[in-house]
Structures are given as structure tokens and as C-alpha cells.
Length: 477
Image (cartoon, rainbow, N blue to C red; front, side, top):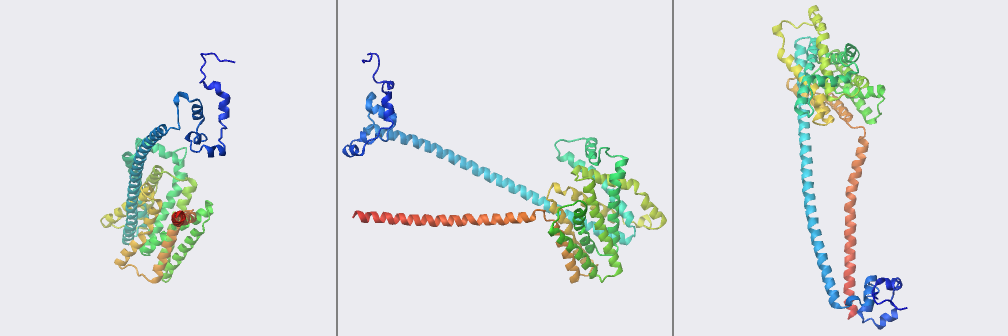
């Protein structure tokens, strides 16, 4: 059958059966041996289907076996690859430069943030330590000069009224969504319950904690009349151990062996401090009063968590302000009765050490403020660390004023109590943190050993290659 003259014999549809056969086109080994000098046959097995078709048909004079066409194609391919490699190299270098700059900038920013936080932490620790030490020394001076511990307690607690105004000033300075005093006050009052700040709330949620706060301060001042401030500060550090024991019983907190050890150390330190003074009645009473103060402070913290839960910063500021206001309004009748009946004699108004009283109250206000709001600028552990650092500061002051005799038993007792306090600062997952740190240290050593192994393997491969290269010329000779 003849094809029409207008049909081109060069169309691919005319040779479709042959195309399917070309896919499996393979040159025999004998033919390769006979015509291995021919470049056209040599490249058939490696050519694509299109090239095979064009070679067979000779379409448009395409001769891929010619060296000129092959050289031109190879040169064009090399130029394209070179351009692609050049652009890729420039892109990679630019991306590496940008990533390095970003890493350096991120590292500097993180380092500056850590330095700023560490600096504020050191300042907070020093302020807490100095305020607590200074208030203890001034309280000792005032209570020994005038035996009016309850009046001093009422006077110091009443200063808490200005905590919420100080908090609101900070809210105006640093908060983005500022609120009016009434709005902020109402929002913080929701912490007290649905009724807000009502008479029922004052009687049920404020009055019990006010009694515990007053009792804590009163017992601490009574103890300062009988023992040195160093012993009083060290014994008051047992508050954290009592908090753990009461929380374990009342709140069913997690049992931790390390905290049981810390509580045992605190109790042992109390006994050793008592033994250091020879079990005199005067010192035993003073130690018992301070230990009672630490116990009531621990009860205050545990019951606060049980009844009110965890408070935010504004809510804590409002609660302390309400405590101070309630103390000023409703408890002021008690020191008045004590002064009129002669149970507490403050003398003439000219004999009142106003400088010591105001200084003690102001330092206690700073101490309570930093103790509640120090977590804004530093870690809670550093805030608690400022309390235990007041013990050596008071020891230096007492030694300078010759009010205490440091024997080996007292030094060991104070050290044991401070050690127990530091153990209580450990987080609940401290054992897991140690295991993670141990794992990280082990993983850091493993890559070094791996690089040594790969380096030794690389050296062995290179020596073997060098031996093979040296053996080849010898065989050729």
C-alpha cells in the first residue's frame, strides 16, 4: 500500500512500532568487538529514545557522533553548570553570612538579657538581706529600750497600707493597658470571692490571717528581747522546713526525701542553738518564742494556699493593703488598752525612739514588698536566698557590738540550719535535672570520640590508597 504524497515519511507516528522496539535495543557483544572503533554504535546503548530516532532517520542532518557537535554540547553544558554553581555559591555565601549575623545578634541579645536579669537578681538579694537584717537590728534596739512589743507590731503592720498604692504606681509606669484605680481595685478584689471586699470577706478571709500575721511579729519581737539577732534570724529560717511539713500533712504535697533531711537539719540546729547557751531559762524561752513565730508564719503560708490559692501580684498587693488597713482600724484598740493599763509602758512622747520605729517599719515594708514582688525581676530562689544571707550579716553586726559569743556549737548549729534552708530551695525535679546534666556531659564526650575514630579511618584509607598507587607503576614496569 502506497502512502499519499502529502504525508511525510518522517513523522513519528509512522514508525511507532519501531519506537517500542527501540526501547529494548541492545547491541550484542560480538558486534561491539567488530565495530568498537565506530562512535555511533558505541553510544547507542547510552543514548535516549529521541537520539536513537534521529540517528536512524538522519532527521535534519543530526549527527551526534560528530566530535564538533559533541564538543559544543559539552561546552554549553559546562557553561550552564558553571553559572549555576556560581549563583549557588553566591547564594550559599550570602545565606551563611546572614545566618552568622543572626546567630551573633541572638547570642548577644540573650547574653545581655541574662546579664540584666542577673544584675537585678543581685540587687534584689542585697536589698532583701539588708532590709531584713536592718529591721531585725532596729527592732532589737527598740524593743529592748521600750518593752512595747505589741505596740511595735501594730505600728509596723499598719505600714502595709501603702503597698497597693506603690503597686499601682508601678502599674502606671510599666503596664501597656493602664486602668483607673477603681478598675484595678475591683479587678483585684475578685480574688477575695464573689462578694468582693465585704464584711463577710473581712471576717472569713482576712481576720484569721491578720491574727496569724500579728502573732508572728509579736512572738518574734518577744524573742529578740532574750536572744541575739543572729540566733533569731537563723531560727526564723526554719519557717521553710515547717511549711514543707505542714503542707505534707494538710495539702498532701509530694513526699521528698531531701526535704525531710532538710527538716531534720533544721530541728537539729534548733536543739544545738539551745545547747550552745547552756539551756538557760532565759535563752530557752527566747528560742521557743522565735520557733513559735516561725511556726505561725508557716501556718499562714499553708492556710493562705489552702483557702485563697495562689495570688497574682496585684491581688497580693491588695491583700497586704487590706491586712494593714484592718490592723489599723480594728486592732488599734488593743495597744491603746495595753498602754492605758500599764501592761506596756512607752514613757513620755519625747522618749519614743521615732527614728528606730520608723526605720524598722520602713525596712519591714521594703522586705515584704520585695519578698512578694521580687519574682518580677529575678528568680524566686534568689529572693529566698536573701533571707538566709541575713544570718551572716547579723552575725558580723553582733560580733562587732559584742553581743554574742561564737563557740563551735553555735557556729555548727547556724550552719546546719542554713544548709537545711538551702536544701529546701531545690526544685522538686532536682534529681531529674542532675540526670539530664549527666547525660549532656556524656553526649558531649561521645562526638569527640567519634571524630577521632573517623579521623583514624580516614588516615587508614589514605595510606591504603597511596600503597595501591605505588604498586600500579611497579606493575606497569
